[in-house]
Amino acid sequence: MESVKQLHRRSIIKRMKNYELKTEKFSGPIEKLLELIEERKMEIADLSLSEVVADFLNYLKEIEEAEPRLLADFVVVAARLILLKSKALLPNLKLTDEEEKDIKDLEERVRRYGEFKPAIGLFKKFYERKEFSVSRPLLFSQEPIFYPAENITIKSLEQAFGGIFKEFQKLTLESTTIESSLIKLEEKIEEIIEKIERGIGQFSELVKEKSRTEIIVLFLALLHLLKDQIIEVEQEEKFEDIMIKKI
Amino acid sequence: MRDKNLTAAVEAILFAYGEPLEIKKIAKILNQDEKTVKEAAEKLNQYYLLEETGIKLIFSDNRLQLATKPEFSHLFENFIKEEFRENLTPAALETISLIAYLGPISRVQLDYFRGVNSSFILRSLLMRGLIERSTETKERSYAYRLSFDALKHLGISKIEELPEYEKFKTIADGANPVQNNFQAV
Image (cartoon, rainbow over all chains, first blue to last red; front, side, top):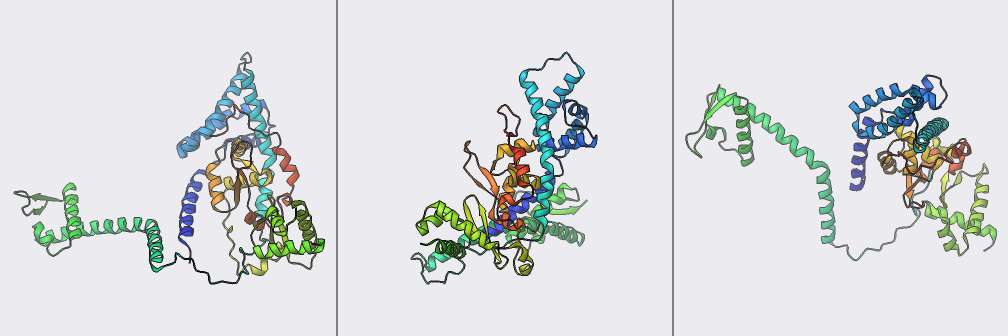
């Protein structure tokens, strides 16, 4: 059986995966620049970087709409590209040493990414091939020795189990309770409509012999129907019976 | 202890222990210095290169582990649960490739390389047991490297066995994030 920790780990991994799927449709800024330059079959240099500014900005718009969280990383690169483009268009524009360095740095990074890229493919091939090694679990051959800890008592076991139970509740209860009450509310709404149609018009009749929780849900259902203007109600005084009529 | 016995002793310890074991610890158990243990491990490794054995040694980060040779993986495909069956997403693949070839590598360096924040992917790779981290870098940040389990999955004995390891490793040299830089925070 899986331990609570494993279950918990699994649920975290699942959540992470959902997140990954959302963000990983997009290439990173350096990768994107490389893609754009390669599409044009150009060499990576000042000039080719400035050629792809417009496309890069379009991509940035896509990101902004789909995954704004990633935007910051792209904006920084975009800023450098725009600077580069400005320089290409205005030859008189003087850049500071730092700006020149930033542009060189960007060029260098795109180049380096391009050089490394084949390694990703090689790694993938290795990762996906089916030849793997297996090792033994820790001290696998150790013979069992009966050596109980002093603090193992019925009580401590009970406590530990209580703890496990709580962990389980954290994992499962959350979703189940909400679900069942949702279903109930809808059921109760139908129940009220059906009863009104059959001529029962008093709230006291509706809740006759019902449990406390059901009464609460019935009352909620009543409020729903009221809000949706399916019924109208009348109550002469506080805590008096509520008369229900279909509109 | 005589040389031959020492090699055998290292093997015995690794067999009994099962999981990756630090050379330092083996040295302590055997009351030898680390250099002697390393030499014994190297002898053991030579022996395992013989076709007559189905075992090999895995090295990483001054630790050793015994494992089966990858060419036999088909024999136990049916009864060993492989944990890495699910394929990696492109970004995860990019990140783990960088860690494999350039590791141990810090997150700052990774971000610099990729131009985008890697912390989320790193967390997920850690959770899947594909990478591990240690605090060895000068900046006191974490350094990431492939885990023993990942090496076993790849079927290699040490990271240097990756195809064209030296070539890609050198690409990283000189790729030092500049201070005023725009690596993602």
